[in-house]
Length: 261
Image (cartoon, rainbow, N blue to C red):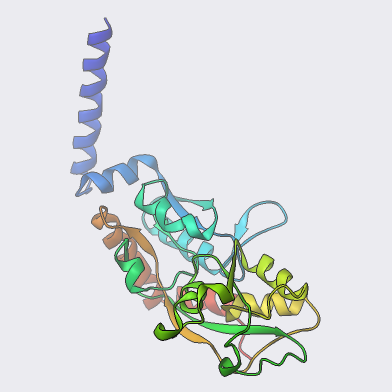
């Protein structure tokens, strides 16, 4: 009987596979995603206004809304997988999540681990300091203790050796999220924090006595990361994203959260 049950289950699975193929699914990866019915987004929901946790425990932000629209176009339901930023790419590589969307900058090292869609937003890394700080521009960072969020480009740039344009690991402290880094700045444990301009504005607004330097630290492009083994999903997500960019949806979401100065 057990063998018969196994055979029946195998037949049913094959039947489902063939029926999905007939409906337009082109590869095993597409079928796996469609059967699941969900699009899992790996993120670190402590990066306003791109992703954040609401009072009721649900998620909101630029990335959340764009990902929701993408999921809808794919006939799927978005599920937000909140985790430390440093584990976001690993979650996609191991199949725990389908896409990585966390205000993520496209870098050469990350391109070696995951594939990226077209860019959907531009980020600017800025420097947060206390009012009256001796740090006035980027040129004043040498020899100062810099706070960043772990695994971010801010950390990568700053912790690089001096001969490679960085300040060295001894002068950089990495924190699990931006809020913790800013709190360390307030407590005097670091001299500044380097982070994306949009969350920086939120942190400064919420903490009196902090300011953002006028000189930006770096300019970056944000995109969505997908496993290199799932080219079909990458193509589908990219197609949906481009449609949302072309019809103005992405810009309207950006305008909703990022007000013109």
